[in-house]
Length: 202
Image 1: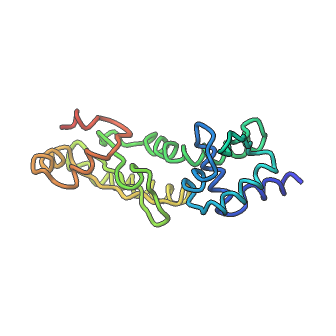
Image 2: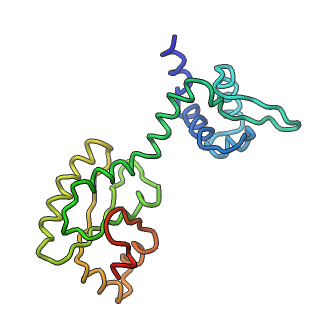
Image 3: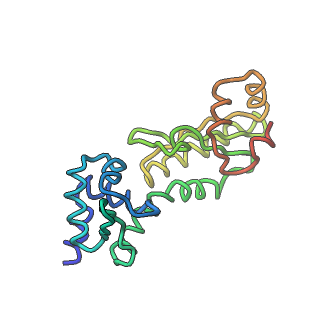
C-alpha cells in the first residue's frame, strides 16, 4: 500500500512538477499560478491538484474567489520523501563541488564554476564548466590530470562530466586587461568554489 501511494503521488511529469513547485513555494498558490510555474494548462493542473488533495499531501483553502493550494508539510510523504527528493535536487551540485575540492591540488589557486551549472540551467547534454587558475605553467599537466580523473567520477555520480579550463594567474590577468569575452563572462556569472576570490586574483 505504501509503495502504491508514493508511486501515485510522484507518477508522471505533471504530478512531479506540481510537487516540486509547491515544495519550493513560500506561500499558498492559486491553481492558475501553479499551472504557470509547472508549465501546465489550468485544466491539467486542476486534475493533478484534485488527486494530490485526495491523498492528503496538498491542502486546499478556499478564499473566495480563489482556491489556494499548499503542501501539507506534516504529511510523512512530504516530510520524508519529498524533502529527500527536492532538497537533494537542490544540493547535489554543492555536494559534488565540495568533494571535488577535498583533494584539490595545492597548485590550483582558485576554482570557479561558470556556464550553465553556475546559472542553474544544466540540461541533459550539459557539462559542468570549471575554471582552474594555477600558479604557473609547470602545474598545468598536474591540474589537467586531476580534473580528467575527477570528470569520470562526476559523470558516474551525477551524469555531468567536468569541462575544465586551466589558465595560469598571469594568463587570466592578461586576458582581463585585453577585455577578453570569456574572462568577462566568468567575472559576471562565475562562482568561486575554492581558493582566491576574483578580486584577489586581479
